[in-house]
Amino acid sequence: MRLSAEEAFRLYGDRLFAIAFSVCRNRADADDVVQDTFLKYHTQNRDFESPEHIKAWLIRVAVNRAKDLTTSFWRKNKVTWEEYMGEAVFEDPADSRIFEAVMNLPKKYRIVIHLYYYEEYSVREIAHILRCRDGTVKSQLSRGRVLLKNMLREEWNDDE
Image (cartoon, rainbow, N blue to C red; front, side, top):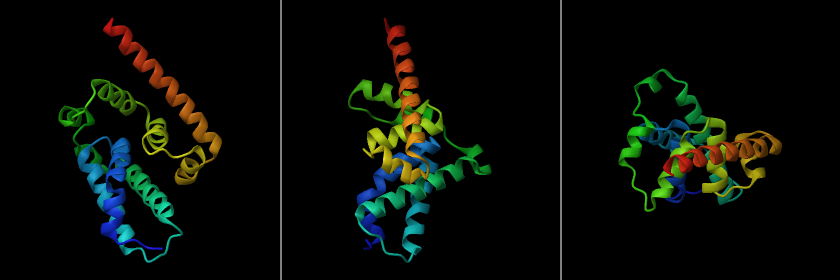
């Protein structure tokens, strides 16, 4: 099975941007990651088993590319995610606070939290995408939840 690059972008572009943004923490780098991911998809001459296989492959490529980008020299010349937060529009103010808390998590927790809650992947699927064990994903989710809970509790207590 193979989708055109345009069709794959229409179906998965926004999700890949969100994933790339959660790793890179800035719009420009996330856009570059999405572009590089679809360029690789377009030039890759292979068939996939299903649309879910395509989606998982695209996410894996995007996560790997985002990780590579965050360690590059050019990363030093970035727009911070805090600056992006000034531009982002949220329907509910609570969504903004939760998003900020997720973005403040260490990268290893931020990625699994995003894939689990926003992309609705199972632990097994996340482990496959990130090429790690189910237990690793479970422990990162658990630790990420604890960190989020503590961050949000502190913020809630500060508001009182």
